Amino acid sequence: AKLHCGSCHLDSGRNPDSSWWVGMIKKYEYPSTHKLFARINQCFERSMNGRPFPIADSEPVSAASDEIKAYIAYMQWLDEEYAKNHTEKPRSGFPAVEKITGEPLRGERIFRQKCAVCHQKEGEGRYRDNIYYRPALWGDRSFNTSAGLLAKPEKMAAFLKANMPFGFGGHLSAEESWDLVEFLKTKKRPAGPPIKPGS
Image 1 (cartoon, rainbow, N blue to C red):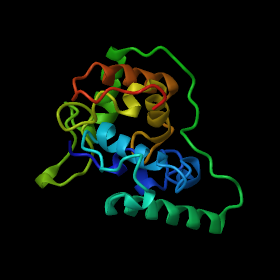
Image 2 (image 1 turned 180 degrees about the vertical axis):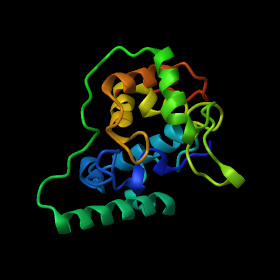
Image 3 (image 1 turned 180 degrees about the horizontal axis):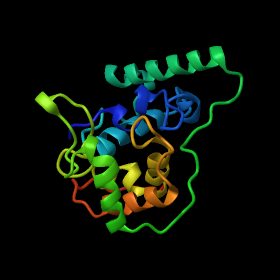
Image 4 (image 1 turned 90 degrees about the horizontal axis):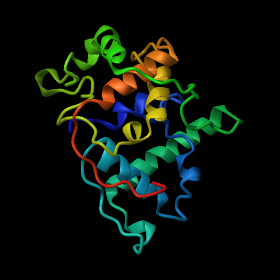
């Protein structure tokens, strides 16, 4: 796949409407547990259709790879910066969006009108001169079938409603967001690993 963490975690994990990373240290009980390692690896395996960083639950937290430690150091820094300017607890997740039955044919029309300018008409993303610009939404370069936004359609609808078109979040209606979800669900993408209950 040709995806970045910032494909979903917009503004380098600093956008509260887009699965930001503020509060992740506490949420996943780092360094008391391995939960944060597992969550990072889920993103690499599913949303980025890649390979996880090696670490076993039986190993001490200090045995994590330098790459995972770098992600955690960045999340810690985000928490510190947030605390400098805010006293309230950071909210998590996307703003709620009402559940509506989407229609894929309407979603296709919306995609061509409002999304294809960035993601291309066949959802292949934009990679001019082999440089990442906008992510693929289906096909071999996209997230796989186990990615959170696909496995939990309500999350994808909320993400779209809050963030798309990029830079104009809130311009899609709830109906348009669900129509796009149903359209994207019809598209072929790599098969992901089995999803374990509760993950």
